[in-house]
Length: 283
Image (cartoon, rainbow, N blue to C red; front, side):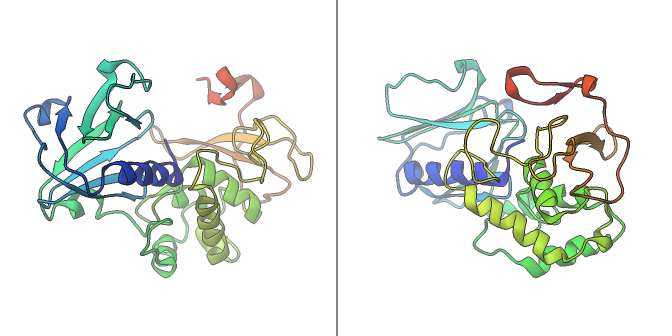
């Protein structure tokens, strides 16, 4: 699932292409919106909210989309060949005189009535990349469940919005904290939250997501997707285990020496495959 910085960058690019311009065509390829028509409406802004995107219109409506695992927005000039996937994978198309915005494989596509945004995103905690970021509120929400494992707490978008598996793993490594430590046992919790926000902030303006300062393939991350490889700091083997209950368990990477504390039995290296250079769990 895309991290908050990926969604923020998509929102920025869509805003630059759509905001202040009249839609000349819309095409919704989802059953519930098959007859919807936004032509003649002006896009006022496109904003991200954690991992959600809101395309706001001059009549008070908002198009709400969520990427989940495979969704993506692509921008094209009129007549340009689409490259984001087969045309049948397009779920929504917005056009103006200068741009076509095509949302591929979007699992969430809904039109919100005026005043309906809280129903879609009101449950989210403070947005780490939002203009209204509120660190104290995020910390209050995290501390409301003091015995919860910090790895799960950081991924809970109701606590703070925007952290995915990558920034969870990298923030905890840089903070020297086990993903299985209880929230109440994390030393200097405000510093951990600020570290996660800083990583997102650093990467939001470009597609590369580096937490090490390097952008070469295989050098961008400290522990994320590096199971079985030596830790860049101490040389110990980076470990991998599932965290959370099925079916919502997430793969978690950590260095047992740099991140001492509670931890489960790690997966065996034979349980980890790397098709196309990406680490995946093989059940």
